[in-house]
Length: 383
Image (cartoon, rainbow, N blue to C red; front, side):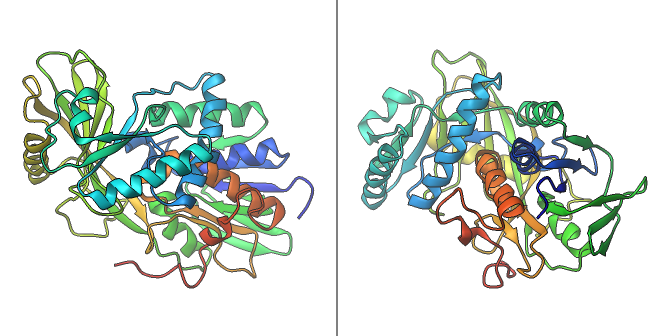
């Protein structure tokens, strides 16, 4: 690899822009190609949650790296809403997992604590604790606006000499001894390395390079919840899902008299076509959400559902992101995609790992991250 390679990053969502930032910081020449506008794909439709309340040590490690970056960016002007994150437990076994998570997070420098069922209303006064054993709470977790995040990152990339070209869809690829020639409908772009951070469109990008990338564009929906009276406390992010078990109901503060909820299980035919899918919330989804909300927070003041929308989770077979080359014999084509619903919170560390692959040929800065490479064992159909 040349000392300062020209790297083209496909996609101006959070993964692409975090990769671009890590590359320009280390001296690479970077061009970001975006088929539409910054944050126009899955990133811009996210509810923006950033949390570390997990039970797997590697998942916690990844978020340690991400939180380090978020703290840096917050000091530089990125707005982060520290409302806290509460993951609910329905069984004693889940509470035991949460107790171990508290220990692992403490060792990693993160803050969390166990909440017993009889303490839940002290944190979320409107919650119905029936059927719950308790929860795992991270007071420093929260959310950010994904458009703000993407434009913040884009500003730094540009300030450091990187280029971001919007409305430049990749149409064709040529290979040569010096790298790649990318056709975009305007002047072709010659580069040494390509990073595919296309999100739900990443399989289409891979196909242009003659590669097969198994990422499933899975539909998810979000809805605003309007309240007749503002709450006299800030609703943390509340999540009813532990390692795939639970209703998937999650909701959080958005404004003083407004919450936002995500619908985890959607009635739709999958996979969705990212170029042609209904980006509005389906009525059945609102009915399902209303039932879950009535069970868990039955007494919210005058709660009614408002505007809803749909976005796509780029999901892999094992629900872990792809970061690295698909084909080891072509190390100059790196994938950074498939983070599912965790793209916002994992973007800083995914960008760090992808930059490692580009500049060092291996993910040297995050222990264990070689396991995220899209190997033949992992890059398989998931449904």
